[in-house]
Image 1 (cartoon, rainbow, N blue to C red):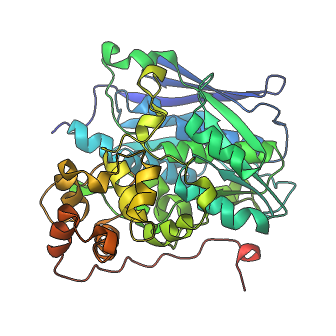
Image 2: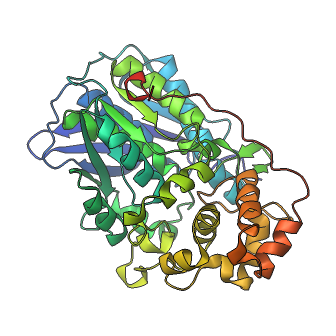
Length: 431
C-alpha cells in the first residue's frame, strides 16, 4: 500500500479570465511539470458580479484531474490569498473525491495538506436571486424530473450543458430539445497531455467530476445572470459504495450531501446570495423513478447508459447497451411503475431484467450475494431491494425466474435510508 505518488508538490499556479473570448485559463504545476485547462462560456459575461469568484473555485476543483496524475503530499494555492475554510474544503474535496481513485490504486492520500497565503478574497453578490435558476442537464431521468418539477416554479429557468470542445451527445441534445428550455453551454478543454497519460506514466482513475461541473455550472450561471444552480442529486448519492483500508469510499461523493453543504458554505462566503442546492436531495431513487414513469414524452429519448457518452464516436451507442450496471439499475428502478412491454421498448428489446446473464449483477445490487457494489451512480442496496420486491409482485413478472429467485433471498424489510435535509430555497417549496 503506497502512501502517495513520487511527486513532491502540486501547485495551483494561476487562473485568468479573457473577457473577449469568454475563456477561463487554469494553470497547474506538478513539481516542474505544467498543465493548462481552458473553459469557455460562449455568450457569457465574464465580468458579471460573482464570475471571478466562481472561476477561482472552478480553478481549484478542476485541479483534481491533474493532481491525481501523481498525487503529492504538499498542495499549494499560489494564486492569491485563501482562508482556512477554503483550504479545508479543498483538502476534503481532494481526499474524499479521490477516494475511489486511491482505493483502486492502492494508495493512501489522506495525509495530503493544502497550504496558501492567509487572507480574505473580496466577495461579490450576484445581480439576480435564486428565482433565476440554471439546471445542469445530462439527459438522465433525475435531471428530467428536476426540469419537470422546478422549471415552472422559477422566474427564469434554463439548462446547463457542459461538453468537451466539438463533442455533443444525442443522449443529451434530444431530451434537452424536448424540454423547450434555453441551453447555456460551457466547454471544458483539458490539457492534451491527459489523453495519453498512461504512456506518460500518469496514474488513472475516477475523479469527482460532478464537483468540477458544479463549479463550472456556478460560473456559467453567474455569467448569464442566474442566481441559483439546481442539481439533481438524490439521497442515496451520500451512501458509501464500499469500505477500503482507510475508510468509506463513495463513487458519488461529489453528488452527496457532504459536498453540497461544504460547497454551499464556501460559495456563501465568496458569492453571498447565490444558491447551490439539489432539488432531489431528500428523495429516494425509487420515488424519483415513480415521477419519471409518468412523464411519457421523455421515455423514448432519455439514456443514462455510459456507452451513450463514449468519447470515441465509433464506440458510442445510440441505444441502451442493456448489460451494464447502470442499465440494470435504471431498469430496476422503473420496473415497479412501468410494464414489461414498456420497458422493453425503452431498452430497445434488450431489457436487463429479462436477461438471465445479469443475475450475479442483480444480486450484488440487491445485496443478496457477496461482492463489491459497482462503482457507478446507482441506488443503495435498500432502494434496490425495495424496487425488486415491488417488481416481483407484478403479474407481468410472475414467470421471471431471476426476479423471483433474487426477491426470495431478501428476508428482511429494506432499511429506510437516512433522512437528508431539505436544501431547496423556500421560494420553491410547495405549500
